[in-house]
Length: 187
Length: 193
Image (cartoon, rainbow over all chains, first blue to last red; front, side, top):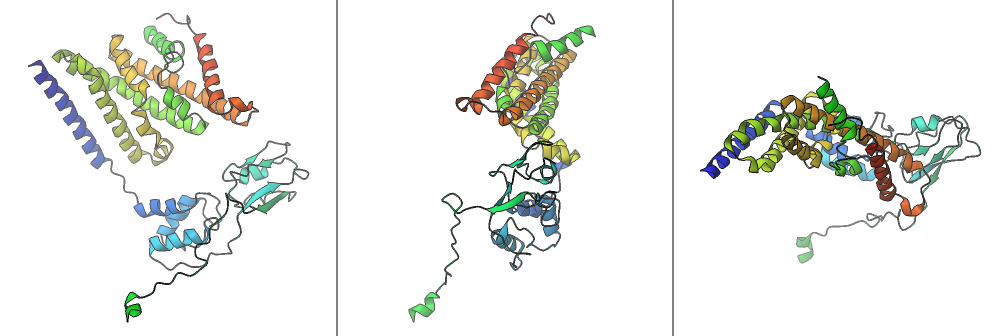
């Protein structure tokens, strides 16, 4: 009998919980645009602002609203191809040109410690303080070049990353792949 | 009134959930590497802990005890915690997208935070009444938040410090946590409970 009570009581608690959650799921349903999330997942999340929007999410919103898909230099051709696939539009050439991957480098002899580049950096890859020499954490730098312009002494240089076994990019499309029509081949 | 105040201060400082009772160590070590995430986690945990203290008290007092099925306490408390966390997530998602983006990934993590279940069970063991349960839950949450934010601030500094190679990473974090725990032991005797 005791076990019967236990089963009924826990069962009732479970049912009440289920009703509350079910009600909440309908009452507090959030209408989100799933396409924006998908676009945002494709974008490289450097938050560099080179597309003219203040970050990747706003640009994803803009693409969903019909903006061009070729405004993301850090993503390059790969991202454009994926976006074209997702949005069902033609892949177009990147606005501007695709540069080789580079990281910023501070020439410390010329750095005056003004912190302007630190404020510009979207990924907090610059270390330093007022009147202290600044330096760039190369692993964190996304190569967005936003720190180059604010520098009053032009001491920041973009240095291309040398190709080694870690940064090597296989160019799988270098040789064009042709699909041979099997019917034609058979004849 | 002063009883409640003593209970609150006692829970926050003297019997701190993390550093003295050693509950909720997983998020304490896990999400303390950045101060902004630590603050997010603190808010989410505060909300859930206080709400869980209230709901688990009601379940224990009006369902489990009258029917004499206290042996199902752990199971029903886990159920209640899961529901509270899920419900909180939905409400926050609807009402405040900004807060949701801050707390988003932390909310489901709280379900497995042992401080939450520990709080519900301790409330029963200490025979707290409803208001005492609430104050105890809130105090535990404030204590957790305080320690988490302090610890994450220290870890942010440690990240830039010149730590000897064998101590880098988790090792120095553990040492720091131990020293913090020692420091909090110093509050013993501040309030007699």
